[in-house]
Image (cartoon, rainbow, N blue to C red):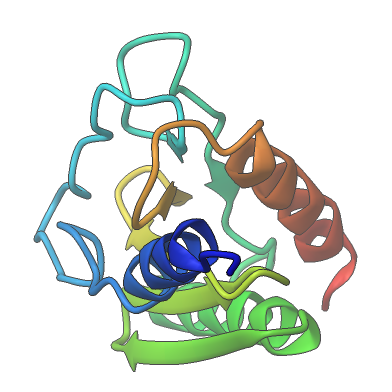
Length: 154
């Protein structure tokens, strides 16, 4: 009689990994996003090390507009790009903060946070896997692709 123990064990591990809750992501952190963990499955505009560091986005350019209008247009552009992306869900949104969940084809959830900084007119962001160690560069690729879409959205 064949044993199914390895298949059952693998299935249990995958289900547990897919159902993991958000780590430090998903919470508004005031002036800073949560730092990336030591694992390579996270990128952040606020990271100080090259392995995790990625460039911030610029606010949308509305010449002569008040900062509130520029911030609003920037947030709307972020939301439009998130909504255009498959397997995403907006979890939380304020005037200066956006948290979205990205679900991979295998069911794993990655958290993506955006924090708008009026002083520098930059959008800081963090994209991180909830579970695992390596993401094979998925979070960095996602955010570079996001950057390209964001540039085209008006």
